[in-house]
Image (cartoon, rainbow, N blue to C red; front, side, top):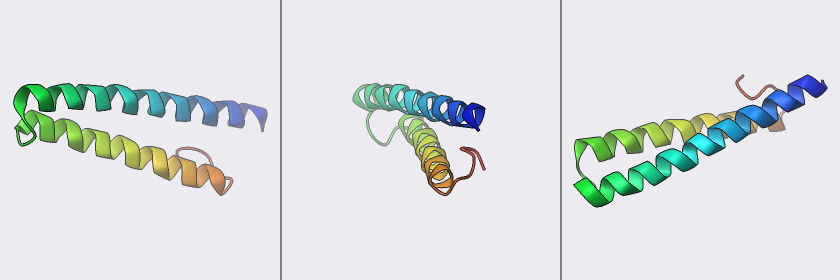
Length: 69
């Protein structure tokens, strides 16, 4: 059980870090290219997917499942 908890913490931290990095990149892209630029929209969609994955993992974790169930 301890290894599972360590995995959950690492998976959560990894996703959280990636979300932070992508959010920063998205803000820079929007400043440089504008909100409606295809690259800004693409990065926004990627960020949405990561956030959704993170939320699903947190929900599964709170219900006693694994982070990626």
